[in-house]
Image 1 (cartoon, rainbow, N blue to C red):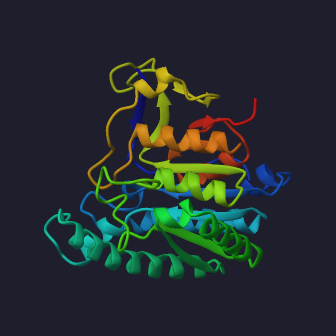
Image 2: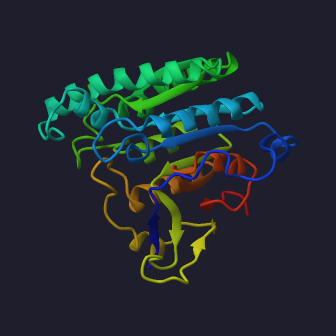
Length: 290
């Protein structure tokens, strides 16, 4: 069996050794799509995890300053909207989910704009539906929009347009999207990215459950999504999100098919993004290059 290992305690800021700029000074600029999950962006109460959001925006802004092009795929709109509206629990009715997502998306973009502005970075919002990426003409326009934004030095912030699309929030009816792991892989393909990073509450793939097997090893490299690997995929993740191992393997297959490397790592340690971009053994890397 392969396991995701959950670790919810953030590492202290500045806990890494050496200079980040020294580690990345000679790196070729890359186009990087970073997907961050709901469980990383929110706390167990449903409120925004501002500490994680600040770490995320600071790290992405710094990577942008190093010459990399950054696209952020962000989850969390329904969870944030639920808390903002002071609802006792996440809605179950589709129309209420969509209304809650609209409120949450507004709040999230306000925070992203504010936090990135602290580091002199400009953001743009892009909300997508399955039709947008499935239709060739729309997809071409989207690709051109991403290209123009990146050329202007903007960091696009992407999410599914839950207010008009039920692909993610009404499970079982999706055609193209359905979760932000898949969405991020599609965005990476549209943008012709060099790297896709999925940040969640997991360290990566293990060969056994590390909670019960102290000798369990993190699998650092995967070169192919085999039927055996798919058969091991489990259910969904935490109550705050929709993703699990199966969705991440699906995203990895989409990325590999497009010649894009994908890494799964723990969002509790945002600054490991520097080492991921440098190609170090952080999390699990699905390598498109043999």
